Length: 274
Image (cartoon, rainbow, N blue to C red; front, side, top):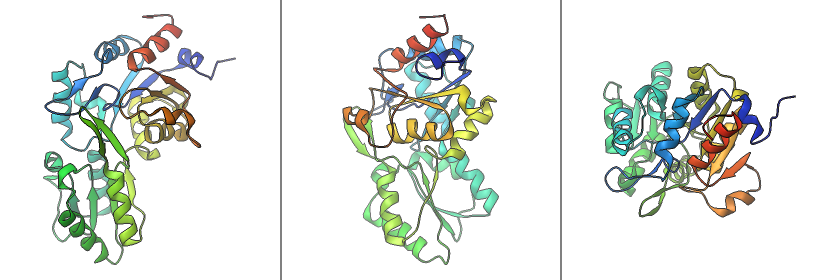
């Protein structure tokens, strides 16, 4: 009988999905810094027989610029392997005939160049960082409150993330403010949305039980993956907090020191590269 627990489940894995910020690198000034051992860990996974994809809620740059930054840090990553929320959001807008008011980071705006933004009938918020001013939040509020059927899309719903100089508030905080002010529920595009995870699995050609998610966010990475039927492993890097290991509702299948450790275990169980 197949071992479904950690680490035995690694023997039957066909694919691995990695979060980026907090797992591969810490963001910050310039390109940020690679987490020790992560560049080699990605290389080892790529040399294995496992499918590999990268699933991120990164919304401060276009996918192309974001991947270029990772490549400068030393990672072997291509644009087609990275799944951020913005392209998924654009697909939803087209499907539903929606025109967004954008409250996002300046670096993300080029993703929406081809999108009709006249007379907006929805609002999209991402990790806008310094653009989360009172004026900009109030403008988004006014658009929503003026709609007969207000629609708010949030590119992820994280509470905070880690940069090299410390923790930073994430988009989920501002999403909740607009939800409260407008008495509505946002539609989340990105982790932990099951639709978002399923799009990555579909690209890999895998069933949930054949894939493993590794992330630093217990709720959005690990919990979201587990809800879809995947195994979820948390690393003790990035935004990890010791209290995560005592969380009342989300229990990681395993908690490991870092990505390099996780890859050691996975490949060791598969009888290669340990």
